[in-house]
Length: 385
Image (tube, rainbow, N blue to C red; front, side, top):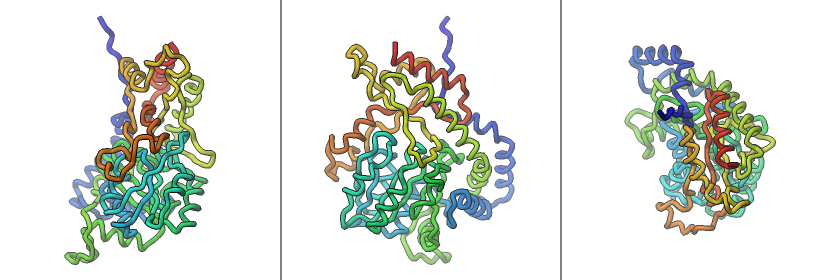
């Protein structure tokens, strides 16, 4: 009789819910009983709490991280004829919102160690049409925001931080989302601070940006039935705000647990041939939304191990009950929708190579030491036997 393998998921939201079930249930029932389901004091309270946590004066909740980015661009009046520089290694929304406002996304390559924007290539991509830069703090690791802000200031460009995967992360003692002109957050359920549905927020220290975003997220209206702009409907439900208020109180603890797991991964994976662990910059404190390794050397030292590609390793880990994820298999500059921009295969070699090599291991605060050791031993067995 074949013994079934107990699976280790990439993420386990059920375990997280079990730790806060009583608080969440009471909050949800309270919202249902109140009859106030859209907007209201719960949403306003969450905005104030998140602003205080991030270290900014202004916060506007919205429907999603995608909407947060879109609203940020609209508030800066970026549109047709403008260019916005961003990474080619991110979820599609980062680029899609640029196109949605009628501007042109300009992609650049990444740093091979951090997966974040290569600041030197950002500088080379600036033209007289460039209006803004969207750095992505990918996988929860802040990019060098000191260099980013110095560059942006020298060219008088806006910086919109994509913090979708990095809530609570810090650069030089400041939380991401408080350093650029605007910060954009996602509360999709899989994020470090996740709702039980979609949700997002915009942070800033500029009251004028807040005013513009509040109008744009409400069909371009500041007064009932009077519309000054073509806006959108982007609300955070009171139910999600109530859940997020509870989870925000636990966020630092959960992020600390993620850092402990990452440190153990670092220690036990660092000497495995064919595997590179992710790197942090000196002034950063990441929150490890993902722990993403590179299987970039597999098969290069020994022709006999050439079959040990990323996909081969992933398949064999799955046979052992270890579920992994690939973020992202195709770079943005090579997406079919952006063929018209004229980017070619080979133009951004680091991104293109990384897309073939990255593998995100199970990462969530409740991941046990035993589960983590199972992941580590599974990798060692795949790559060293």
